[in-house]
Length: 441
Image (cartoon, rainbow, N blue to C red; front, side, top):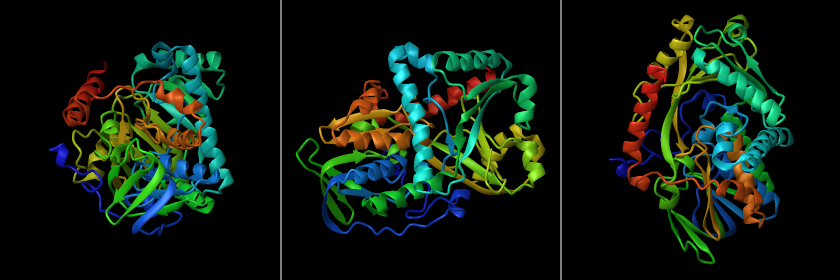
């Protein structure tokens, strides 16, 4: 039963990063102690991913006394395991947001998304984070019928939003952008990019600590008391924190720590493999211009080259919360569908992770109490947006809530049945989306 499944331990060894390519090539290790005994602070942040680390950094820079609690290691969750794509816009296309929320609100969301990319680049430069940031994301259409939609959407972004860093890619050029016979066109966004996600998270952690935030690892939160009171008590396995403000930044690993937040997000698993390194010539035959790629499938394939010229490929369908026994074989199948020429290539790493989606595929920002905030559910678009989310949470704690309100006003609905029916809904959704890919609808 899902109610008995603990996603913090179901698929991973507690206290250790997943056996990923990212962990094997991490630029630094962390050695933050577990929390012992009682502590007090201005702001307690729960979760050591992009949202929590960014919030801690920006709060500490404002002079607030910050304690961050991470159940495992800094960057342990989706922030340290993802595809590393720093995408433009929101998870949902601007045309859809215009229909849902009106053009003025959609414009605010676009501007915030642009700021999220700029923030990532600024943090990398300011704190000298070695995370291999590289420009470019190619959105590849796996069906001919999608190509004209891509052309129209590119023109919409250029004409309505003034975004000139994206251009249409036709059927002839797509073969020069990615060495696969499976794509018919798409768009190339050079204002987006890709990076080593764990190194970026570790760099944020180092910056937060240097700014004065106190980071504690292997410190699992077991309960929250005083929601709505003047001070909140956050209980852990070996201590407690009393804080004026609490930020929940747990994303897919929230569990039922806060049932209100849990009702609005659904954890889903994703899987990535890393091949053996390629020669420079081999790498150029796969992705000649070293951009990241995301395709148009509902169960999306996404891939890019690492700094040492491995193919990092994410894909595969999972209908539950336990990882496959052999992730390498599990992801090899969709990888070979896209790149049949890699049949004899060795896979050196395979790993999984859990992210969070919302019913509308837009992030869930909420004020759970006057002094308790959450931001979660980035729906696979979290590298930049979660980083900005942390900064926005820090602003809201400090009394400036304008940007927080832009997201809170999206009014993200809860899943039917709250957190109790998320598992059967996940199975139904994944079955349906997989069927749509196979039928081409």
